[in-house]
Image (tube, rainbow, N blue to C red):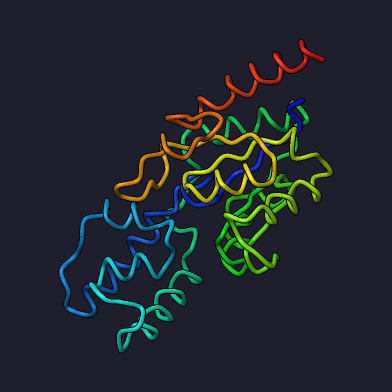
Length: 226
């Protein structure tokens, strides 16, 4: 029986790339480097600040000066993490429906809590989000099952009744390992060259609005079979 929904954060619940892009553009200008295609940054969001900066500056993490560059990026992001960020289209309506139906929801992310907690707060979701699991709150991050299992425990639900929605293979792997149903968010930050068809998610959606009908059908079908 459908009991709850969990979301990945960046690229699934929230469209955060414009804030990343604004910071990277400013840094590139300051370093007298050419600007890059936003699509390149979008495809690297799932790899965090390291992936985005490596692509933008043509550097490797072990290169001299990279650590200072990353610290500068993280400092700026801390100061302006919700300037341009918005929920993806369809997410506000979906969350309203989940709340109205009494279906708890939460977030499982590989974004550190020092960024995730204030971001969720800035979006006005802190009181509605039933659980927020970050990598510094567990011993093993996604794709391990631990974060999803911890989220289910905090929501007070069994994993078998939960659906985990994400835009990266590790989200689907984490959900499968925990025993939840999984949904691939095809509208998210899919890494270049990756094919979500190979993730073997339970379901996939092209936009957030498409999740509600699938959840309704899943709940109706499960209720009929009880």
